[in-house]
Image (tube, rainbow, N blue to C red; front, side, top):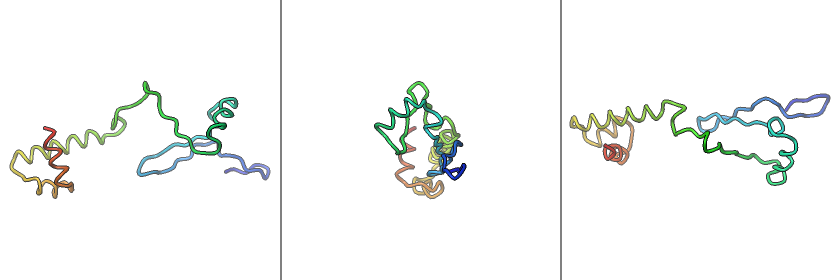
Amino acid sequence: MLTKGGIQIHNPYRRLVKKQEAIVRYLNAEDVLPAELLAQVQQYADGIYLYIPRRADHRQNWGSSTRYREELHQRNESIRFLHDEGLGTEALAERFHLSVKTIQRVLRQK
C-alpha cells in the first residue's frame, strides 16, 4: 500500500504473485471496473479475491503460450524411438526420470 497524507491507498500497479512457477497478475477492481459495476460485484463478493475466467472465444489451447507441449512431444518421440531400438520400459523410466507407468502410457499413444 502507498501512503498519501497519512492515508493508506491501494497501489494502482499490478502485483505479481509467484504461484507454483506461474506468474498470476492481480489487478485492483477499482482500477478496472466502472464504479457502478464494482458496487454490484461487491454485493456478491465483497473483499475477496475473485477469479474471472476468459471468454470462450479468447481461450488458448493448453501449452500454446509456452514450448512445453512441443518439448513433451519431442520427449515422447525419443521414448518411442529408444523403445523400438530395444530399450525396456524400466531402463527408459530410469533414463527419463519417469515412472514405468508413464513410459507405458507414452508407448500406448503410438
